[in-house]
Image (cartoon, rainbow, N blue to C red; front, side, top):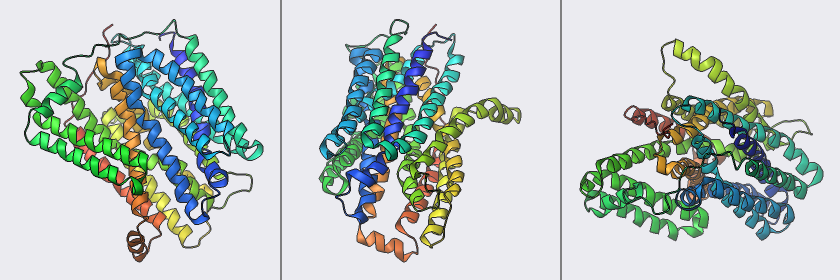
Length: 502
């Protein structure tokens, strides 16, 4: 085992405490303090929108972090300096608890810092391994995900109590101190890390160059890409309805999605401009991005446990001392149990039955389980809408199902994204994996925006549903359809082995 791994794992544990410590009290703080000027009937929707806009930023900035690391500064330098930006963001939250602009600026800095380093830390873990010890990498990625949830568990359990007892400045200040400690631990290991070379001059036959050549070739693919540009222009005109962040992210998703499809249709035309291996590499990356796109519905469901599920918990019966947001501690606790259980018991048992536990099978099943969890939580919402008293203990069941889905999708996806990425694109491809979370939260904002229409609301109520329950069943169906499409597409996907040579 490389001796530098403990520094990266220790850094990640402290950083995840800092992130989840502030994230898991964000909705409650917005509802109870910062958004009190918003009319009560609109406050839930406003808090949910702010939360998911923040999450969109966190998982959008990995594109920037991955690009500047791969092309300019390298992973270590980018992680270190963006970690300092991250610390500054925490300081703003603690200092500006009563100042809307100052607090939102702090959220922006955290989304920039946390998002910028997010793809780099996991790919930096992969860089410490080569073909000779790659079997250990899978175990370390599981340990990496385990420590993420170790930090998240204590943050989820403690920070709601700190917020209620000592107030927002302390509750947001403690995560800032942990982020400072995370940065220090990472810096202490600086002389032990393996640093992969940076291609500052770029590769004339790199992925983006091949894609642009394909789009310039003219034909049906170029027309498809132009449709994406047209859709992006339309989305920017919808800023008043969607908000700036959601509209800009939707525009970029349309450009990248339609552009990727268009390029895939015309890659056969660029064989004279680029070597065959470069064209094949671009084709492999585009196929990988289709899988990432099909994972986005999972994140739509998963991230709402910190918004929609917390708001549902507010309506449920619970002890006076128990804060609704504390239920989220159940998720990381279950992750810490399920990761060793799966690796030591479940996966070996399934393989002894003759079924190969491949990464793609795990991820497809995980997406489906998220849909099942939301069917359960939707059923509980129907009880609440019908006036029944429902204990918060019932939420344990959907949390357990969703968490098993998370372990199958997210823990698997970290190593999968790294192993499938070409050597020169580790940071960027891991950024695209994180971008799938942005797109998932974008679907949430679009769904919330659509139900604000009086006509849509009337149609939902006419069908005998409350708006919240209807959205829950809608998202469940969304995930189950995605799981089916993922399984069908994965059957034709060829696995890659892109670890560096020993």
